[in-house]
Image 1 (cartoon, rainbow, N blue to C red):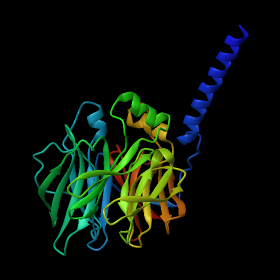
Image 2: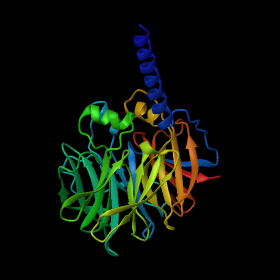
Image 3: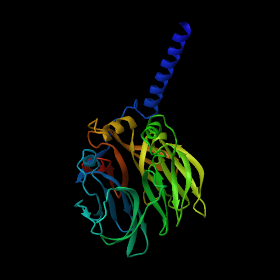
Image 4: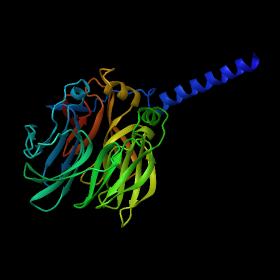
Length: 342
Protein backbone atom coordinates (compact mmCIF):
# COMPACT_ATOMS: atom_id res chain seq x y z
CA UNK A 1 0.00 0.00 0.00
CA UNK A 2 2.82 2.40 0.87
CA UNK A 3 4.51 1.70 -2.47
CA UNK A 4 1.24 2.37 -4.31
CA UNK A 5 0.74 5.66 -2.46
CA UNK A 6 4.33 6.65 -3.12
CA UNK A 7 3.93 5.85 -6.81
CA UNK A 8 0.72 7.89 -6.99
CA UNK A 9 2.43 10.79 -5.20
CA UNK A 10 5.32 10.73 -7.66
CA UNK A 11 2.88 10.69 -10.61
CA UNK A 12 0.93 13.61 -9.15
CA UNK A 13 4.16 15.58 -8.63
CA UNK A 14 5.27 14.83 -12.19
CA UNK A 15 1.88 15.86 -13.59
CA UNK A 16 1.90 19.07 -11.55
CA UNK A 17 5.47 19.82 -12.66
CA UNK A 18 4.52 19.30 -16.30
CA UNK A 19 1.51 21.60 -16.01
CA UNK A 20 3.57 24.26 -14.22
CA UNK A 21 6.34 24.00 -16.83
CA UNK A 22 3.86 24.34 -19.71
CA UNK A 23 2.24 27.44 -18.22
CA UNK A 24 5.56 29.05 -17.28
CA UNK A 25 7.35 28.30 -20.57
CA UNK A 26 4.50 29.70 -22.67
CA UNK A 27 4.24 33.03 -20.83
CA UNK A 28 0.89 32.34 -19.18
CA UNK A 29 1.86 33.99 -15.88
CA UNK A 30 3.23 37.11 -17.52
CA UNK A 31 1.37 40.34 -16.86
CA UNK A 32 0.75 42.31 -20.05
CA UNK A 33 0.55 46.05 -19.50
CA UNK A 34 -1.38 48.22 -21.94
CA UNK A 35 1.09 50.61 -23.50
CA UNK A 36 0.01 54.24 -23.64
CA UNK A 37 3.04 55.61 -25.52
CA UNK A 38 1.36 55.10 -28.89
CA UNK A 39 -1.94 56.25 -30.32
CA UNK A 40 -3.90 54.64 -33.13
CA UNK A 41 -4.11 56.88 -36.18
CA UNK A 42 -5.65 54.36 -38.59
CA UNK A 43 -7.33 50.97 -38.69
CA UNK A 44 -7.09 49.38 -42.13
CA UNK A 45 -9.99 46.93 -42.67
CA UNK A 46 -8.39 43.61 -43.59
CA UNK A 47 -9.13 40.16 -42.17
CA UNK A 48 -5.98 38.27 -41.22
CA UNK A 49 -3.14 40.59 -42.32
CA UNK A 50 -0.69 38.10 -40.84
CA UNK A 51 2.46 39.21 -42.64
CA UNK A 52 3.72 42.21 -44.55
CA UNK A 53 7.01 43.62 -45.74
CA UNK A 54 8.15 47.13 -46.64
CA UNK A 55 10.26 48.45 -49.49
CA UNK A 56 11.95 51.46 -47.91
CA UNK A 57 13.64 52.39 -51.18
CA UNK A 58 10.34 52.68 -53.07
CA UNK A 59 7.98 53.51 -50.15
CA UNK A 60 5.41 50.75 -50.38
CA UNK A 61 4.20 47.76 -48.38
CA UNK A 62 3.08 44.32 -49.56
CA UNK A 63 0.52 42.66 -47.28
CA UNK A 64 -0.34 38.95 -47.10
CA UNK A 65 -4.03 38.55 -46.24
CA UNK A 66 -6.02 35.41 -45.43
CA UNK A 67 -9.25 35.21 -43.42
CA UNK A 68 -8.10 32.41 -41.12
CA UNK A 69 -10.99 32.86 -38.69
CA UNK A 70 -13.48 32.43 -41.53
CA UNK A 71 -11.66 29.35 -42.78
CA UNK A 72 -11.59 27.93 -39.24
CA UNK A 73 -15.34 28.48 -38.97
CA UNK A 74 -16.08 26.71 -42.25
CA UNK A 75 -16.38 29.87 -44.36
CA UNK A 76 -13.22 29.90 -46.48
CA UNK A 77 -12.53 32.79 -48.83
CA UNK A 78 -9.73 33.37 -51.28
CA UNK A 79 -6.78 35.27 -49.80
CA UNK A 80 -4.82 37.94 -51.60
CA UNK A 81 -1.79 40.21 -51.64
CA UNK A 82 -2.26 43.95 -51.22
CA UNK A 83 -0.15 46.97 -52.19
CA UNK A 84 -0.06 49.98 -49.85
CA UNK A 85 1.48 53.23 -51.05
CA UNK A 86 3.23 54.55 -47.94
CA UNK A 87 3.66 58.03 -49.41
CA UNK A 88 -0.12 58.45 -49.32
CA UNK A 89 -1.91 59.36 -46.10
CA UNK A 90 -5.08 57.55 -47.13
CA UNK A 91 -3.99 54.10 -45.84
CA UNK A 92 -6.07 52.44 -48.55
CA UNK A 93 -4.36 49.25 -49.76
CA UNK A 94 -5.04 48.05 -53.28
CA UNK A 95 -5.54 44.38 -54.06
CA UNK A 96 -2.74 43.41 -56.39
CA UNK A 97 -4.05 42.27 -59.76
CA UNK A 98 -2.63 39.08 -61.16
CA UNK A 99 -3.11 35.35 -61.55
CA UNK A 100 -5.13 34.11 -58.57
CA UNK A 101 -6.67 31.20 -60.50
CA UNK A 102 -4.93 28.89 -58.02
CA UNK A 103 -6.37 28.29 -54.56
CA UNK A 104 -4.60 31.00 -52.61
CA UNK A 105 -4.32 31.13 -48.83
CA UNK A 106 -1.14 33.18 -48.32
CA UNK A 107 1.00 33.12 -45.19
CA UNK A 108 4.65 34.25 -44.96
CA UNK A 109 6.03 36.42 -47.76
CA UNK A 110 9.38 37.62 -49.07
CA UNK A 111 10.12 40.68 -51.21
CA UNK A 112 13.33 40.89 -53.25
CA UNK A 113 14.23 43.86 -55.44
CA UNK A 114 15.51 42.65 -58.81
CA UNK A 115 16.12 45.98 -60.52
CA UNK A 116 14.68 49.48 -60.64
CA UNK A 117 11.55 48.27 -62.46
CA UNK A 118 10.37 45.20 -60.61
CA UNK A 119 10.51 42.93 -57.57
CA UNK A 120 10.22 39.23 -56.87
CA UNK A 121 7.66 37.98 -54.35
CA UNK A 122 7.66 34.55 -52.70
CA UNK A 123 4.54 33.47 -50.78
CA UNK A 124 3.81 30.45 -48.60
CA UNK A 125 0.44 29.12 -49.81
CA UNK A 126 -1.72 26.78 -47.69
CA UNK A 127 -4.04 25.37 -50.33
CA UNK A 128 -4.72 21.64 -50.76
CA UNK A 129 -1.01 21.03 -50.46
CA UNK A 130 1.55 23.37 -48.97
CA UNK A 131 3.39 25.27 -51.69
CA UNK A 132 5.53 28.34 -52.22
CA UNK A 133 4.39 30.60 -55.05
CA UNK A 134 6.77 32.81 -57.00
CA UNK A 135 5.68 36.08 -58.67
CA UNK A 136 7.22 39.16 -60.19
CA UNK A 137 5.76 42.51 -59.19
CA UNK A 138 5.50 45.25 -61.81
CA UNK A 139 4.12 48.37 -60.15
CA UNK A 140 1.05 46.97 -58.42
CA UNK A 141 0.51 44.01 -60.78
CA UNK A 142 1.68 40.42 -60.37
CA UNK A 143 3.04 38.01 -62.95
CA UNK A 144 2.97 34.37 -61.87
CA UNK A 145 6.28 32.55 -62.39
CA UNK A 146 6.35 29.22 -60.58
CA UNK A 147 4.98 26.94 -57.88
CA UNK A 148 7.36 25.06 -55.60
CA UNK A 149 6.20 21.91 -53.83
CA UNK A 150 8.20 19.19 -52.12
CA UNK A 151 7.85 16.62 -49.32
CA UNK A 152 10.16 18.81 -47.21
CA UNK A 153 7.28 21.31 -46.95
CA UNK A 154 5.79 19.67 -43.87
CA UNK A 155 4.31 22.80 -42.34
CA UNK A 156 5.83 25.85 -44.05
CA UNK A 157 5.37 29.11 -42.19
CA UNK A 158 7.63 31.78 -43.67
CA UNK A 159 10.03 32.19 -46.58
CA UNK A 160 12.89 34.50 -47.50
CA UNK A 161 14.77 34.83 -50.78
CA UNK A 162 18.56 34.63 -50.70
CA UNK A 163 18.64 35.65 -54.37
CA UNK A 164 16.30 35.26 -57.34
CA UNK A 165 17.01 31.53 -57.67
CA UNK A 166 17.31 30.38 -54.05
CA UNK A 167 15.41 30.73 -50.81
CA UNK A 168 14.98 29.47 -47.25
CA UNK A 169 11.72 28.50 -45.58
CA UNK A 170 10.72 27.40 -42.08
CA UNK A 171 8.60 24.43 -41.09
CA UNK A 172 6.94 25.36 -37.81
CA UNK A 173 6.34 21.68 -36.97
CA UNK A 174 8.43 18.62 -37.65
CA UNK A 175 5.65 16.07 -37.13
CA UNK A 176 2.63 15.60 -39.37
CA UNK A 177 0.46 13.65 -36.93
CA UNK A 178 -1.72 15.23 -34.25
CA UNK A 179 0.07 13.75 -31.24
CA UNK A 180 3.51 14.72 -32.47
CA UNK A 181 2.36 18.29 -33.01
CA UNK A 182 0.77 18.42 -29.56
CA UNK A 183 4.10 17.27 -28.10
CA UNK A 184 5.88 20.07 -29.96
CA UNK A 185 3.38 22.68 -28.82
CA UNK A 186 2.93 21.69 -25.17
CA UNK A 187 5.99 19.63 -24.24
CA UNK A 188 8.31 21.96 -26.11
CA UNK A 189 9.75 19.19 -28.30
CA UNK A 190 12.14 20.92 -30.71
CA UNK A 191 11.44 19.21 -34.03
CA UNK A 192 10.95 22.02 -36.56
CA UNK A 193 13.53 23.10 -39.11
CA UNK A 194 14.78 25.37 -41.90
CA UNK A 195 15.03 24.13 -45.50
CA UNK A 196 17.13 25.65 -48.29
CA UNK A 197 16.28 25.54 -52.00
CA UNK A 198 18.63 26.28 -54.91
CA UNK A 199 17.28 23.79 -57.44
CA UNK A 200 17.24 21.03 -54.81
CA UNK A 201 15.85 20.99 -51.28
CA UNK A 202 17.97 20.32 -48.20
CA UNK A 203 17.51 20.73 -44.47
CA UNK A 204 20.05 23.24 -43.17
CA UNK A 205 18.91 23.74 -39.55
CA UNK A 206 16.95 21.48 -37.22
CA UNK A 207 15.98 21.02 -33.59
CA UNK A 208 14.13 24.36 -33.39
CA UNK A 209 11.18 25.04 -31.10
CA UNK A 210 8.49 26.09 -33.61
CA UNK A 211 10.54 27.73 -36.36
CA UNK A 212 8.37 30.68 -37.39
CA UNK A 213 9.42 33.97 -39.01
CA UNK A 214 12.59 34.10 -41.07
CA UNK A 215 14.65 36.87 -42.61
CA UNK A 216 18.16 37.79 -43.74
CA UNK A 217 20.37 40.40 -42.12
CA UNK A 218 21.04 43.67 -43.90
CA UNK A 219 24.57 42.57 -44.88
CA UNK A 220 23.10 39.29 -46.26
CA UNK A 221 25.50 37.31 -44.08
CA UNK A 222 23.15 35.88 -41.47
CA UNK A 223 19.81 34.11 -41.40
CA UNK A 224 17.45 35.08 -38.58
CA UNK A 225 14.83 32.64 -37.30
CA UNK A 226 12.07 33.27 -34.77
CA UNK A 227 11.47 30.49 -32.24
CA UNK A 228 8.32 31.57 -30.36
CA UNK A 229 8.00 28.34 -28.37
CA UNK A 230 11.54 28.90 -27.12
CA UNK A 231 11.08 32.70 -26.72
CA UNK A 232 14.26 33.03 -28.79
CA UNK A 233 15.65 34.77 -31.85
CA UNK A 234 18.23 32.51 -33.51
CA UNK A 235 21.17 33.71 -35.63
CA UNK A 236 22.83 31.49 -38.25
CA UNK A 237 25.82 32.34 -40.45
CA UNK A 238 25.10 31.70 -44.14
CA UNK A 239 27.78 29.62 -45.89
CA UNK A 240 28.62 29.83 -49.60
CA UNK A 241 26.67 26.64 -50.42
CA UNK A 242 23.60 27.81 -48.51
CA UNK A 243 24.35 25.75 -45.43
CA UNK A 244 23.83 27.37 -42.03
CA UNK A 245 26.13 27.49 -39.02
CA UNK A 246 24.55 28.27 -35.65
CA UNK A 247 26.01 31.50 -34.30
CA UNK A 248 23.91 32.36 -31.23
CA UNK A 249 20.42 32.83 -29.91
CA UNK A 250 18.93 35.74 -28.00
CA UNK A 251 16.22 35.41 -25.35
CA UNK A 252 13.47 37.87 -26.26
CA UNK A 253 11.08 36.83 -23.42
CA UNK A 254 8.12 36.61 -25.80
CA UNK A 255 6.75 34.43 -28.59
CA UNK A 256 8.04 36.36 -31.61
CA UNK A 257 6.40 35.72 -34.96
CA UNK A 258 7.50 37.40 -38.23
CA UNK A 259 10.78 39.32 -38.49
CA UNK A 260 11.14 42.60 -40.38
CA UNK A 261 14.19 44.84 -40.91
CA UNK A 262 14.09 48.62 -40.82
CA UNK A 263 16.35 50.89 -42.86
CA UNK A 264 19.16 50.55 -40.31
CA UNK A 265 18.98 46.76 -40.27
CA UNK A 266 17.39 46.59 -36.81
CA UNK A 267 14.82 43.85 -36.29
CA UNK A 268 11.11 44.34 -35.57
CA UNK A 269 8.72 41.56 -34.62
CA UNK A 270 5.07 41.14 -33.82
CA UNK A 271 4.89 38.82 -30.84
CA UNK A 272 2.63 36.70 -28.62
CA UNK A 273 3.40 37.28 -24.90
CA UNK A 274 1.20 34.32 -23.88
CA UNK A 275 1.25 31.36 -26.24
CA UNK A 276 -1.57 29.58 -24.41
CA UNK A 277 -3.83 32.62 -24.75
CA UNK A 278 -2.89 32.78 -28.43
CA UNK A 279 -3.70 29.08 -28.90
CA UNK A 280 -7.12 29.55 -27.32
CA UNK A 281 -7.77 32.62 -29.49
CA UNK A 282 -6.66 30.85 -32.68
CA UNK A 283 -8.97 27.94 -31.88
CA UNK A 284 -11.92 30.28 -31.36
CA UNK A 285 -12.14 29.54 -27.62
CA UNK A 286 -11.00 33.00 -26.47
CA UNK A 287 -12.19 36.35 -27.80
CA UNK A 288 -8.85 38.12 -27.49
CA UNK A 289 -5.14 37.39 -27.10
CA UNK A 290 -2.36 39.78 -26.02
CA UNK A 291 -0.03 41.51 -28.46
CA UNK A 292 3.51 42.85 -28.27
CA UNK A 293 6.02 44.56 -30.56
CA UNK A 294 9.68 43.61 -30.00
CA UNK A 295 12.71 45.44 -31.41
CA UNK A 296 16.23 44.00 -31.44
CA UNK A 297 19.05 46.49 -32.06
CA UNK A 298 22.60 45.51 -33.01
CA UNK A 299 21.56 41.87 -32.80
CA UNK A 300 21.40 41.83 -29.00
CA UNK A 301 19.57 44.77 -27.39
CA UNK A 302 15.97 43.64 -26.84
CA UNK A 303 13.20 46.23 -26.32
CA UNK A 304 9.49 45.73 -25.80
CA UNK A 305 8.08 48.80 -27.55
CA UNK A 306 4.38 48.08 -27.36
CA UNK A 307 2.10 45.82 -25.29
CA UNK A 308 -1.64 45.35 -25.31
CA UNK A 309 -3.86 42.82 -23.56
CA UNK A 310 -5.83 42.16 -26.76
CA UNK A 311 -8.55 44.77 -26.47
CA UNK A 312 -6.88 47.00 -29.07
CA UNK A 313 -5.39 44.23 -31.20
CA UNK A 314 -5.18 40.47 -30.73
CA UNK A 315 -2.30 38.18 -31.67
CA UNK A 316 0.13 40.59 -33.29
CA UNK A 317 2.24 38.72 -35.83
CA UNK A 318 4.25 41.36 -37.71
CA UNK A 319 5.43 44.91 -37.06
CA UNK A 320 7.58 47.45 -38.87
CA UNK A 321 8.22 51.20 -38.71
CA UNK A 322 7.91 53.71 -41.51
CA UNK A 323 9.07 57.24 -40.71
CA UNK A 324 7.20 58.12 -37.50
CA UNK A 325 4.58 55.38 -37.89
CA UNK A 326 4.43 51.81 -36.61
CA UNK A 327 2.41 49.26 -38.60
CA UNK A 328 1.19 46.10 -36.83
CA UNK A 329 -0.52 43.11 -38.45
CA UNK A 330 -2.34 40.27 -36.73
CA UNK A 331 -3.14 36.62 -37.31
CA UNK A 332 -6.94 36.80 -37.30
CA UNK A 333 -8.14 40.30 -36.44
CA UNK A 334 -10.21 42.33 -38.88
CA UNK A 335 -7.79 45.26 -39.06
CA UNK A 336 -4.20 46.21 -39.70
CA UNK A 337 -3.27 48.82 -37.10
CA UNK A 338 -1.25 52.01 -37.72
CA UNK A 339 0.30 53.54 -34.58
CA UNK A 340 2.15 56.76 -33.90
CA UNK A 341 4.17 57.56 -30.83
CA UNK A 342 2.57 60.28 -28.71
